[in-house]
Amino acid sequence: MGMGEDGLTVKKIRYGTVIDHIPVGRALTVLRILGVRPEGGYRIAILMNVESRKIGRKDIVKIENLEIGVEETNKIALIAPEATVNIVRDYKVDVKRKVKPPQEVKGILKCINPTCITRQDREPVTPVFRMVSSTPLEYQCAYCGTIIGEREILEQLSGIGQ
Ligand code: CTP
Ligand code: ZN
Image 1 (cartoon, rainbow, N blue to C red):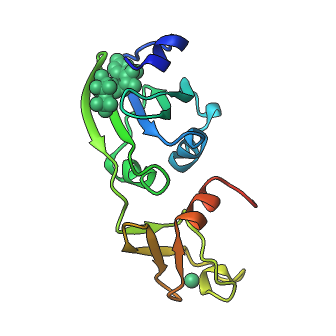
Image 2 (cartoon, rainbow, N blue to C red):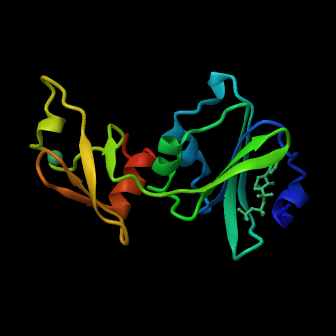
Image 3 (tube, rainbow, N blue to C red):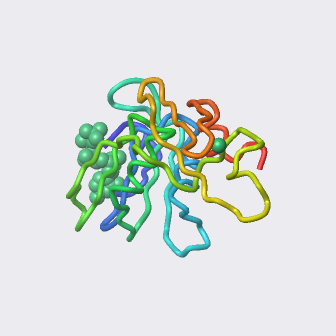
């Protein structure tokens, strides 16, 4: 158990998902990406700015009784490239996954080109982005070719300006 968790005495969970090694301040954005809301009924623990055993500090999110899948895991990489997703079963980490940015992202990012077909009010088209670079992270709109980078992705997903 990491020092920070020790200090705050956040319990181990029996079943569920622990998302670890999230950059400081991004825990709530991770929940937002996963579409997990407190009203949804899951018990959630959020630790922010706790000591990491490796280096520096981190955020951690624990969601009881929910196992997130590989596709959701990889969406987390858009804002937390070093995150690990631990699936806990009967108190043990049963599966540990490194996040990996998806090749294609549907729906959660918005094109920044105001004339893009995905931005028109009539006949809404779901935005689709394809990865063009992994370091730095860059995605290209499948409709108009506009490229968005890490800063835009983080701003959009953390809900700034929404
Ligand atoms: N965890 C939990 N409940 C459990 C088991 C683990 O909340 N029943 C949490 C741990 O507190 C930790 C994360 O899940 O935050 C990963 O656990 P573990 O793999 O045991 O920790 P580390 O070995 O430190 O992980 P890593 O190597 O990924 O840093
Ligand atoms: Zn576009």
